[in-house]
Amino acid sequence: MAWLALRTNDGTDPLSSSEVAEFTFRGERFPLMDMQRGIRKPAVLDAALSFRTVYRPDGAIRPYDDAVGSDGLIRYKYRGTDPQHPENRGLRVAMERRLPLIWFFGVGPGVYLPTFPVFIVGEEPKQLQFSVDAVSGGSLNPESPLEETLRRYITVETKRRLHQPIFRATVMRAYDTRCAVCALGHSSLLDAAHIVPDREEGGVAAVRNGLALCKIHHAALDARILGVRPDYVVQIRADLLDEIDGPMLKHGLQERHGQPLMVLPRSHRERPDPLLLEQSYANFRAS
Image 1 (cartoon, one colour):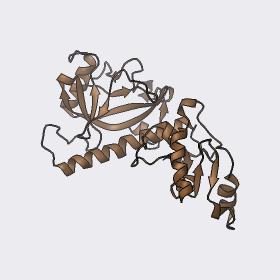
Image 2: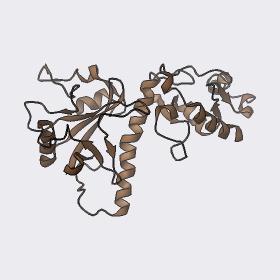
Image 3: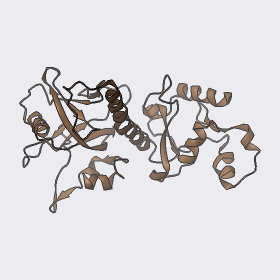
Image 4: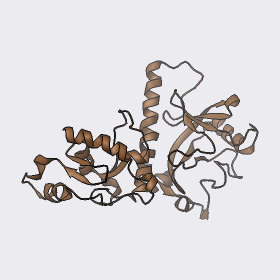
C-alpha cells in the first residue's frame, strides 16, 4: 500500500494494469491484482489481498453489480454463487482477521484507481455479497444500530473518498491528464470539473458530465466567467474581454474566447454531453 501511495500520488492518480504489475516483493514480481478474476487471493496467503471492479462505460453493465448501500458501505459480490469458493473464503478470512485490502476500481479499459485500505466488515449470504468499509478503518459493524447522523456522515465520507476520486480519475484518463481549455498537463494543477454540479438535476458523476480543467479555468467555470457552448467553443464573459490586467487574464482567458476546446476525449461517447453543456451555458449567459 505504501508503494501504491507513491505511485498514485496518495490515491489521486490511476494506474494502468501494466503499472500495477511492476510491484515487486523481495526482488520478485508479485501481482497485486488478478486480471483474470475479481479477487486476488495469493496461494502463499490465507486471506485475500485485493479485489477488483471492472470498468463500465456509461450505460454498460458490469459483470457484477458492486454498489454503495444506503448505509455508506460498499457491497462487493461473491465470486460466483458458492460461498465456499476459495476466493470468497479469502475475503471471509480477511474479514475475520480484520485485515486491510486494496480495491482496484476500473476507470477505463485496463486503468484502475486503487483505494486502500478498505476492510470487509460484514457478509450477506442471501445477497451473495460482502460489506466493505472504506471510511472508518474497519471499526464499523453493519449489524449495530447506527445513529442517523453517523449514517449520513459515513455516506458523505464514502462519496468523498470514493466517488469523487473515481470521477476525477475517469475524467483525467479520458482527457489524457490535460486541461480541456488550455492543454496544461500537470496533474497536481488539474481538477475534474462537473459541467452541471452534482447537487443539481442531471449532475451525475459520469465522464460526459465532466471536463478536465486547470484550477484557473475550473474556478472561472464555477464563477461563470468562462462558459463552454454545446459545440465545444469557449466563451468569456463580456465585461472581462475589455478589462486590462496581467498576462493571466490576457493569455489565459481573453485569448481563449471564441476558441474550441484544445483537448477532448478520443472516444466520442466520452465527450461532454451537449445537453449538459447547454444547461451550463444557459446559466453562464444568465450571469
